[in-house]
Length: 187
Image 1 (tube, one colour):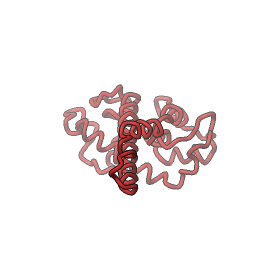
Image 2 (cartoon, helix red, strand yellow):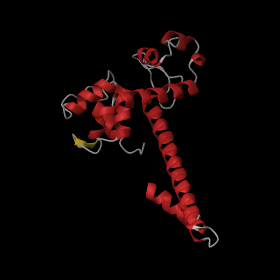
Image 3 (cartoon, helix red, strand yellow):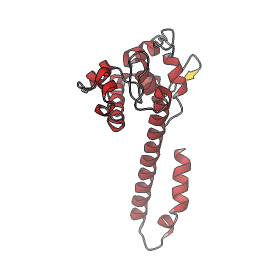
């Protein structure tokens, strides 16, 4: 996908490379800037697509959702997760009484923070990216989603056991399910 975007930009802005009045360094500098811009734009689009699809899988993108085990919001946060992230005043009881204590934008911010925390907790597990476990290619996006489902520790157990320890949540979704479902994003 990166190659397609970069090629498109090069074709679209080909005058950057062919303008006779611009010296070589200036051309390279502009090309570098356009490439960085395209990569940033691509990653922002992929992140948005990932977040949207995660919300769809978790709650049907319903930010008011509460499931039968007490997780709530578009991304189905547990109270303990929110407390860990610093959202100490957001509880299931308060959310049911007034969902505006945890609006959609705050939920997206909490998800962004949770992703950063999980990536920090998984920092020594990058070497699994590209491996195949139980027929599923391990990717960064799949690891982020699986850590969201069961926590970083559960994902570490899965990876270290080569898939033998494949815990499921209360609703029956396993770590491998999320690794497979969310492996197609370039994050």
